[in-house]
Length: 419
Image 1 (cartoon, rainbow, N blue to C red):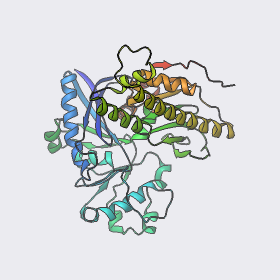
Image 2 (tube, rainbow, N blue to C red):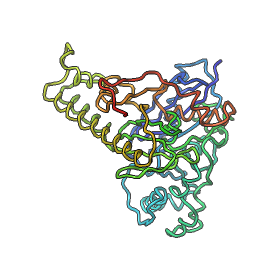
Image 3 (cartoon, rainbow, N blue to C red):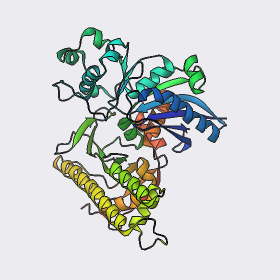
Image 4 (cartoon, rainbow, N blue to C red):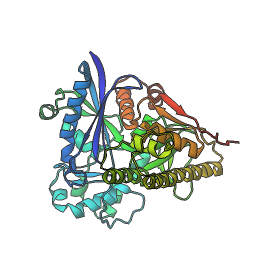
């Protein structure tokens, strides 16, 4: 029987899971959608979603045993221990004045919006931490690296913003990514199909595990993390400065992550696809609709109208040029710090599965792009953290070097000028 880590990532609309061995490729992959993505109780769907995903994985790879579980997820999502949720993407009012901490703002917004659950819960958790708590009964808060403390919270800051000691006690202690959170309880085993006693490790916030899963961990490494939104992330030894650049610590001490985020690239195209399906009364994949737009003259059958093709072309033009602008913002900021700029980047996320879309990006940016063996970088990052803790590797960098490999490289029609 093969041994694998069950890697789990909680998204906004679905839960992704995979069996990952000590190799760059996944053994089996599953995705379980949530029924109501706008629900304040969406966290209560995560455990049943995990069971559905696990059932699918068992069917796809029946000869695979689970060595351990590692969980990551979106943030800053706030969840009480009874599952009442404030998703990271939901607008909510806060009176917090601190400009650095994302978490204190969200905690304050949660206690205003869901005051009953705030005051009656023993624990207030993040997204991956809630699922970890559901599996193990242990409450933790995953702090990616010491420098993230000001982005999360300190007792001093919480006191300053009006949180009482009783409220502060609701926030579980900080632990490092890859920490052993506990073991699957009998109750959780009955609810999910996992074996009682299975080790459960802490992943990290989804963007952190994505950077690990693309090996964006050293100077000059860059990735395009795509989904409903999109962000180009560059690893640097110094914090970059510039308009629209978001700078955060790397999980690697002393390193930084500079990103330019475009909030709606994937969402705009998904909305367009839904509109076409409704107007044409058809079902069409993301891959096929892009082919219809970019290879209009080559397609034997036109599934969309000329007007729809032009609308799609306009969206592709806007999105890719937003990415081009983001790339150049980072390039300019790097030059101002005297830092080398990478000659390629790694693509991750669902969009990376679309070959034509990836080639369009590559050609527009005049920049080589690589796709890894596991395009779901969050799951690859979970695997790296778990295997590091299980003793397979001595460092995150070593594990990423061994477990993140390129599957394909897209080359632009017009090479970039790096002189």
